[in-house]
Length: 276
Image (cartoon, rainbow, N blue to C red):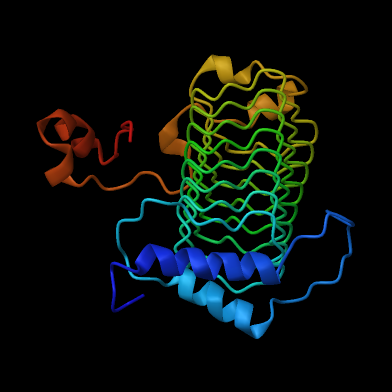
């Protein structure tokens, strides 16, 4: 595969077929709590390593790893952009710093998976199970995670800007300093979750449940974001409407990037908010 660009896609498809053949996903016991965590056989692990670290070339076909069991697999820094992993079992797998952008992860089991700093932009996580998964500092911008299960997940500093998070269960999750700007959070469950210093500018929280949630220092820059169910006056009092009051501000301005338009802000010593 490294030596022949002509054979690249054929070899990737062959390796993926081998993994599917050797590691089928059994539907029995799907999602069962306390299930024993194993690891892929050594030959399957070797095939996965070859797929994840393959040469960077233009590929016309996405990798098909749907409906397989890769529980406990080591896939850190793997290149799995646009891969089809729908319905697969990746519980307790190590996917830290992996590229899963635009991947199909519908109904995928990712409970207790390591996804620290993973790239999940535009991924499809509808009805995926990510209980107690570590998604700290992961990039989940514009992800579609409707009805996903994220109870107890670690989402510290996660980027969820413009994500579709309707009916997602965040109960007990840590979203400290998470970026939820412009996210659609209709009927999301934040019961007992930690949203301290999170950013909710222009987030759509219609019907969201924030019972017992910690919103201390949460940045709510528009009144519309406060029109949410089960948010007490005491909780609202702990939110912040000034971006400069968020921990980490003020920040020095990079004058080469700001230009003349930011001169006034630069003099004040604060960075101004810009759309990314």
